[in-house]
Every structure is written in C-alpha cells, then in structure tokens.
Amino acid sequence: MSLPQVLPEPRVWFNPDLKSQNYMVPGVVALVLMIITMMLTSVGVVKEKEIGTLEQILVTPIKPYQFILGKLTPFVIIGFVDALIVLALAHYWFEVPMVGSMPLLFGLSALFLLTTLGLGLFISTIAKSQDRQ
Image 1: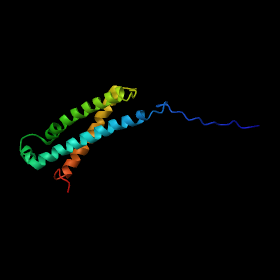
Image 2: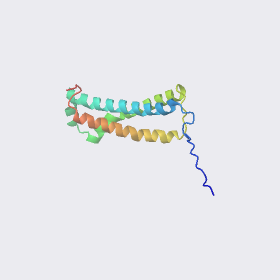
Image 3: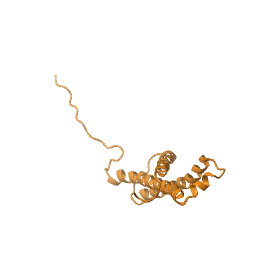
Image 4: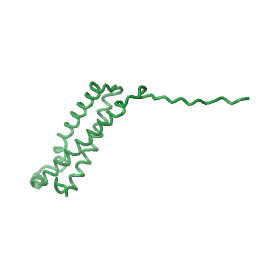
C-alpha cells in the first residue's frame, strides 16, 4: 500500500500575472499620503510657533479642539485630493486594476489620514523650529 503524494503547487490569487506595478504602486499611494500629510501638518503648526501667532491664537476664546480642527481640515482635504490623483494615475497610467469597494478604500484612507495627521501634530509639538539643529 502506497501513500498518496502531496504535490505543492504555488498560486498567486491577487496578482496572477506577477506584475510589479500591482505590488509597488499601491504602496506608493500610502507613502505619498503619509509623507505629504505628516509634513504639511508638522510644518504648519511649527511655523505658527516660530512666527509667534500660536500664542495669540491661544489667548482667543476658541477652544483647543477648534484650533486643532481648523488646522487639520485643510490637510484632510489635501490628503483626499492627493489620494484621488494618485489612484487615478495608478489606474490610468500604470494600469493597476481597482478591484474592491471604493467607499471602503476611502474610509480606511480617512483612518490612515487621521493617524498621519496625528503624528504630524505630535512632531510639531516636539519641534521648536523648522531648522535642523
């Protein structure tokens, strides 16, 4: 009596053609979102510190959450516009297939943007100026 043989056969389900752009371009989308939103947020708040207008804003009757929302709202919009541009380039120029739920993609992109904007705010609280020391 002989035992049945198991023949392993590798299959690639999500990229059967093994095109490198299908792996690399989505990573670039996340990288662009992360770098742009973190840099813009951190530089925007640090510039307020350098100019001295942050102290003037803090003595106004606005609440701290209103200040943070006011600072982050433009960067959220910029992040979504960047995501749209990069996704359009990925689809039309690099021919990366867009399969799946677009609302889910943008919902998770919003969550990702919140984390990168939070990191940018954290960096801006640590940094004293925009100059390298």
